[in-house]
Length: 391
Image (tube, rainbow, N blue to C red; front, side, top):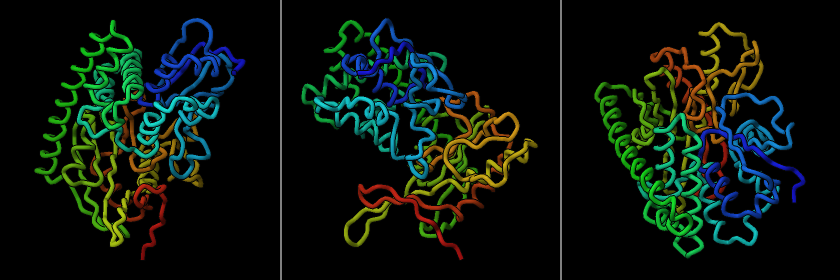
């Protein structure tokens, strides 16, 4: 049992990992005791993922979870250097194995972990917890505590469902989450259902919004097809839309790379996989490793901003790259799973918008793709990075 007395948890804008962890602390008090959360009311504080933290482990009364690159943040860990292999919940589990003696929680943990590490869906239901959480995060961008409170309650409902024997494929659906919350916290059920209904409406609206924007982009010819070695033709689409379903809508329309421009000038690049069935029946999935795209955009960003850089560093690496002056971050973040690239997200709204012009950025992405590595997975085996040999 920890000798620490944790009073505050500093985290990012809530995601599934945060919600799972918060619910675990509510549902399993033994986890609190083992981590050192034993006195008074626990305070949650939310910071941008772009915020630098000089010494995240200096104060024994504070945990930085899933942000800050401290003890309980997977970002920057050596094990995630080439591909994402751990999540922040893994680091909590190394301190205290919360799965031990709780078989009903194991499958939930695995789905949340797989979503964070490999980007796998937690459920095929169109209004699963991941979708609803994203909708509430969009609607309440200045109220992260409200989103976390709702998410915590949802996970407690999921825990109840699993303990009751509900199949894992169903526990993240609205119907079963409502049933679980009704058992766990009946007095909060009305509030939970109100926000669930609001989130469902928001998801529907964003899907329609994104689909319309994708159609407009296609009609305007904002796409290109590029041949990438060892993967074949890759279709790239450029879309102007603020919907959080834009990447998904572009992939459903048959595009492998979706460049999404927001009205405030920020840009996200969403990657998708190409799936192929081999002669032996195995399924192989290929993604484009966007490290070379990140390198090109980071260098262009520095050039157009007139900022000093360190030329000999690895410009393709995941995480952040810094300008020389004041060690400020170049505003292009490559997550550890390396198949998307972000200039600002809902978790880092304070990142400055790119100064690369739209035509130049599209050109840079197109020119970089043939030089990119591949991320390959056969069936459910561990993903691997493959070098591409060009003539």
